[in-house]
Amino acid sequence: IDYKNIEVVEKGKIESFNFTECNCIQGPNDTVSINTDFDDSFLLYDCESIDQCNAESVFEPVPNVTDECDEYPNRQDYVGGSGVEFEKACFNNFRSPILQDGGAIHVINAQVDLETCTFTNCSTDGNGGALFVILSFLDCEIEIEECIFDSCSASENGGAVYVYVSENNNELEVDATICQFCNSGQNGGAFYIFFNRKNCNLEFEESIFDSNMAKEEGG
Image (cartoon, rainbow, N blue to C red):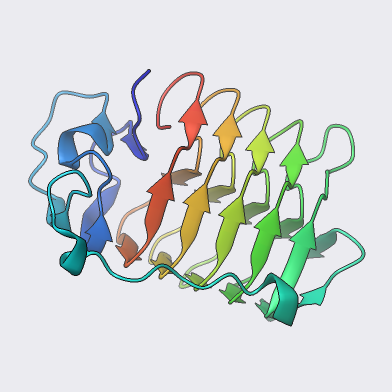
């Protein structure tokens, strides 16, 4: 089994991947999968591998905030609007309805801001075990900060998070987030991200990906 966290499947759609202050788990070659034959200079590593660095250089993981957050009773579904914001929210044991994506949160064409949220055992028969986002607007941003995705699953793509962007100048930032024990039936055991336009940026900082698995690519 190959343990990979990000899969790049098409040339020319992404300006850069910058891995800043992250833990690559098994090093760059086992963290990124590239399916096409092209220059990989847009992949920028400023990481240390857990199996190579000493204990003092590994940053402290994000604390578990389950006991301090507001537990949501229902799955959240948004289409349009000014944006979706959750802070200190817990989503436990959610499953999307049949033939629908996004186990806990389903968003179409709205900005997303998640801060100090916990997603535990969320699942879907489609894409995005915890979070599913489609953006077809210009200049939208998805921010995921100090969140935990634990034991989430998708029968298709994105065990924890699925993002599809079909317009220019959009951005996804993931900061100080833990994604562990998530899995997918197809691609992206942790995150599945597809930018189908130019000038879109993806940034991961101080985040941990541990024991995530995919049946196909991008565990």
